[in-house]
Image 1 (tube, one colour):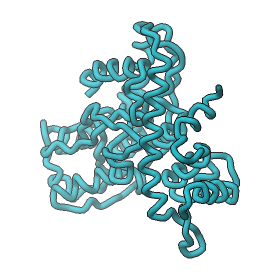
Image 2 (cartoon, helix red, strand yellow; image 1 turned 120 degrees about the vertical axis):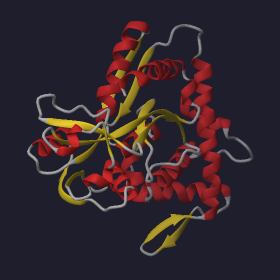
Image 3 (cartoon, one colour; image 1 turned 135 degrees about the vertical axis):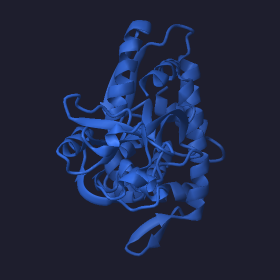
Length: 315
């Protein structure tokens, strides 16, 4: 029996529902539009829409409704999604139980995360597991934050390190299991001859008159900078935007401004800059994320155990 046939027969309750169609419905909800879901599933938009309409006919309800020039999911579709997410989580658990042999974790383990997470957490994780779990083959993929959730959803990754942010799935999202890993403090980075460089701790209000070098708009650290400065009572005067932390530190070294930089971010040691801790302790929270139920997979559980050992050593 194929995996797809087995999954389809699990849902035989009055109807024989084709779970491929349910997968299309979940993808539309995840990606936001039929077009984006179709692209991820390698369908045409019309084929994806047809799959959902056929699912609706099987259930006797409408799952799509007109919305301007597009379509959107109906309330009935939203109700079905709650069950679809629960089915996916149960299937995840079924796979774990079917594969459990009582042996050491073995096979591929696909992990992903944003650049700082790769260099400070996932690289040490892979090295440690190579020694302690030699039957595991760890594959690391560097991704942007949103892409990590997409890879998990598409079952292209087993474990991700993500950052808690306002535009990512909430902790109670039924598709994912997000758990705190560590808090990464932000430091104020200034030129080494700056008056604030001599302080053990700085109140960000003391840097209110400085030009600021800030991550690109739309990034989580851009939002963190604005939030931290706002909490200190001012709006930063943004002089420059940059993407990479070493680029930001280089701009600071050339006395073009100051910046908030997470402590996990590696800065080139030759640059004449100083990190100063901040009063109020602005931080970002890093999380581990799996598909719902996926943290019980033996390989993932081994990786999570190792990450919990590594995390306190890197901040």
